[in-house]
Image 1 (cartoon, rainbow, N blue to C red):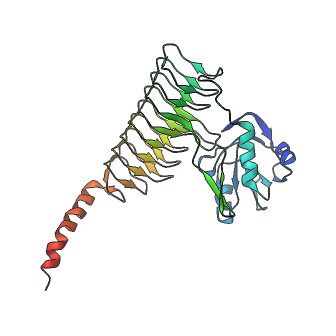
Image 2: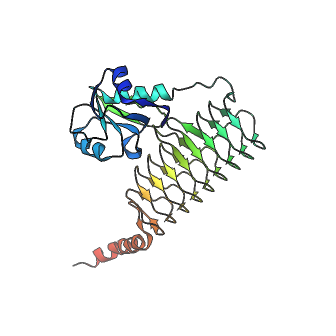
Image 3: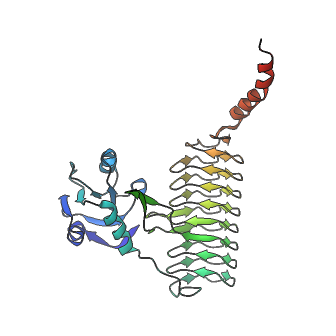
Length: 309
C-alpha cells in the first residue's frame, strides 16, 4: 500500500512516540507486510527469529520491538507494540468506508459498462469499459477493474483479508488496506470471493477465467490467461503464474509459487511450490504420472498381503 504523500520517519516517530534509530532523513513511501515489501516501504517485525529477514528485506523503515544493528540506508522505529502501530498506520492512510448507497459517488465507471440492479460498488472503485456486472455482486472500496470484465451474480470482490495476529489467547484483526486489481477480459463466476490484500494488492491477470464458488485469499497474484474451476481455494500471498489450469476443488496453501503453464488436477492439495509446465495430482500434489504409479502399487497391496506366508 502506497501513501498519497511520502511521510518523514521523524514525523512517524513523533506521532506515535517511538524511538528512532538509523537514518533520520528517510521518507516512507508506503507500508507492507514482509512478503510483499518494496523499497520505500515500512514493514514490521516483533519476533526475534525474523529480525534478520526484516533487515535483509527491501524495506526502508522497520517497526520493531527492540533495537538491533541497522544498515545506514534504513531506519528503525522501536515500539513495545509494533503491530498496533502498523495497524494504525494502515487505518490512517486507507480508512474503512461504509457503503451508504448502491454506487458510491467516488466510483468511476467506464463507457459501455452494464451494471444490473442490486450491485454494490464501494468508494474509490474504478471500472473500465464494456464490463458486465450482474445483480447482487459486491465490489469493495479501492478495487480496480479493467475493460471487458464479466462479474457474475453474487460474486464478492474486495472483501476483508482473513488475517489475524494471536496475542494473549485471542485473535487481533489486521485492518485491510490493500486492493483488488483485475485485468482486462477477466471473467469471475457466481459466488466467487476475492479478498483484498492486508496492505498489498490481490491481482487477477488479464484474460483469466474463474469459475463459480472459487475463493482467492489476500495478496494472491494470479497471472494471465489462467483457468480456475469451481470450489478451488488459493491461500494468502500465493503467486500463480501465467496460463495455469486449476481443476475443481483444488486447495493451494499460502505463500507458494505455481509455475507458468502448470496443470493441477481435480481435488489435489498443493503444499509446496510447483514447477512450470508440469501436470500435478493428489495430496500432497506431485507429478501426476508418479502419483498414478503410487496408486497402482497401493491397489495391489491387498493381493500381495494375502500371498505372504
